[in-house]
Image (cartoon, rainbow, N blue to C red):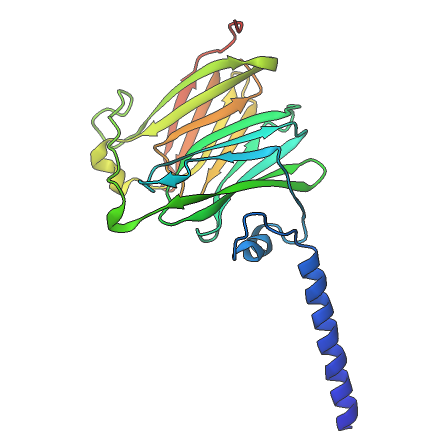
Length: 264
């Protein structure tokens, strides 16, 4: 009886080791050599197909003095049928910085996404791009950020005319034409300096065109800097409408004029 029980446990142990080895083999080696890479995969890409792809580029300063305002730019070149972009910072729990859903009806091969990030320590920063075939294409880099007493003080943003003197924020925005019928949208959400410390988190940003068609949607994480400049490539040159919602259910809106003039 004991011999049979021991054999059973030995078989189960061997099966568990085999399953663990199979799971390890299915995770691609991390070119950034992060100790948290397996946790990132388990949290965000369980059972998904992954590949590191040079067509996904993450640009940011090598060293950041003020971790409360880190500019980040994601550039995607030559990828078809982009459905979703997820930006991840390994040192930030649960990792997600933002999710970006571009216009799924646009046959874009080149996309750009810019934003600001709050970081208090060095971390790998990754952009994962989901294409229509179900594959996540991943690019990234290390960012050396320092928090605590040695960090430089954050610069105060000026009040916008749209924000007024009350507690309601305003939105500054402008668009420029891009090749292939695209436009590049840049916008910033501003609040009076007296309100920023208690300002609720932004939960969703949507961009739609004059016909009401959804052109882009962003779902920010807690570490995203909502007062930084956002940069998006939109598959339209029509006038746009920006709709921002925060954790208190408040909405802030702004229209942006057409970027239909011809490029030089």
